[in-house]
Amino acid sequence: MSNHKLASAKDNLFDNSSMTFREHLDELRKCLVKAIIALSLGLLVGLYFANDVVKYVADPLRAAILEFNAQKDLALMGFEKGEDEAKNARLMQMVTAMRENSLKFQVVYDLPKEAQAFAPEILAAEAKEQAKKDGDEDNQAASDEDSEATIRDYSQVLQYVPDPSSLTPRVQMVRDSSGLSSFKMEEPFMIWVKAGLIVGAVVSSPAVFYFLWQFIAAGLHRHERRYVYIYLPVSVTLFISGVVLAFFLVLHYVLQFLLDFNGSMDVSVEPRLTYYINFVLLLPLGFGLAFQLPLVMLFLQRIGLIETAMYANSWRIAILVIMLLSMLLTPADVTSMIALAIPLIFLYFLGILMCHFIPRGPGLGSGAYDPT
Image (cartoon, rainbow, N blue to C red; front, side, top):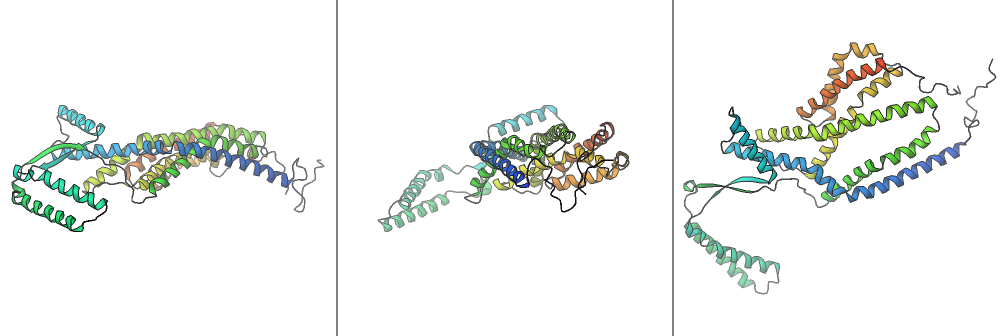
């Protein structure tokens, strides 16, 4: 018979420990301080590269807008995809060239030569008036006289302008400056700080996890630490796979779908910087978290909450739940929802295989002293 005495509620659970409760708190404080220092250093690195990160994140949207505008302009001119493969190939070449060179079509109407002759005089009068507004207005009367002269010049121009319906349109190509915009002065600065925080958290995450793991590992059994060594790399790999899939593959189709939807409603697109950055961060994060599905299934099976046979028999319900989760974890569009749901369905069946073939080991907490 074992002579080991069970602890009562009044006993100090740290009596048999090599460290007191205060020493444990002090060790936790040291680990947290080290983690905060690592995060601060990572923030400095992140702020240094924040501009490049924002530009890199914004490039897919700018490319999608330029391609959308090029396709819309070509469609208005009668160039649309059809059954002719050669024509379709030429159309795609034009779209690619316009996107890579930031070009768009613009329809202009040439005024008669008599009206164009007044252009230099009008521009000179406007420049002179603007210069006086920017400088000291010592002679207000002269400024008023110049303004009246400009108005007279405009009225003379209108005498030579014919009926607009009789003007002949002319197509020219100009630079397309479409892209992100901000409505508040502090908005770009806040995005810069947010990008720096995200990059800093990613850069410093190995050191932060290491310092926190030093404190946690001391209280775990050997087989429990082995679980972490095995499943943590798998979890990180799944998370990174979800992020990479979302940013490098799904994001392009999501942006194209949203732009086409706006085009079908004849709505011009002027995306704001804050909303787009939040959108880009939400989409990969949702994919990365959702890709943890096999490990969650394995955890629930290991603690005895759900058996493997129940996973296999409930696959229809699981697919329905996956579709609902995909709708909640991604922005409100069908493309991103389907793009997340299809990999999750494969990961669900991967989780069933993991539950079936990975052998059970000692459960979490086994071998530990139970004080009750």
